[in-house]
Picture 1 (cartoon, rainbow, N blue to C red):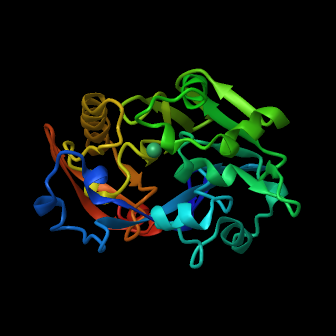
Picture 2 (cartoon, protein in one colour):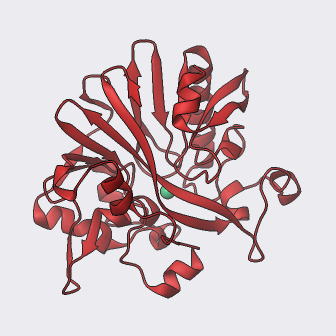
Length: 288
Ligand SMILES: [Zn+2]
């Protein structure tokens, strides 16, 4: 779909299921369970969704899902399932081959966001999935991801990202930046150190890819902050500010992990927010 000078698509790159308690932090199950069901292991159904942006001669991806490098056991624990959706196939449906991708923005390097950045070749060695692409990672996030804490080290798998540096495809970014005219990196720090969200502008209107600041429509209410977050109070402040901006100016939120809906508008005032219109990116943009 066209949005100003950009052509935008969302693709699912695989399903995921994470513990509902961890996904909703201090919110009790008898509240979050009203809007989303948990499976027999208390996991909620999620997806991994990449934003595809075509701009002039560039093909830009935002996040790359979990990829195909993980063991069966790992995929079982996290409910990773690429039988319905798979990144390379989905890109080919858009007429995009691996060599066509010029830029990959990694919001952060947790395995469900960056696993697809690197693949195994036929001999089982890691290689860059999009060999011609620059991969953008915030510098402070890179430094953290290569030396994570005990709380979050299970979320970082070095083979997802170390090959980017070794192959010379890594581009470290220092803080917020307008990467291309109308395409901005927005840095937030509550979920992890220097996560970068992506805002695409068309005049007053914008699309905000929320990554793990607001992973699903159920996380729009400000106190619905994940237990995974390193600094939940910072996430809360960041959500109140960013959601306030999304109410004040026409903004479509894009959810990386919501299996039911790719996008939503926000309604609310003060510190109280909820998802208004929800649907596909095309439907929600049309309702702006
Ligand atoms: Zn994350």
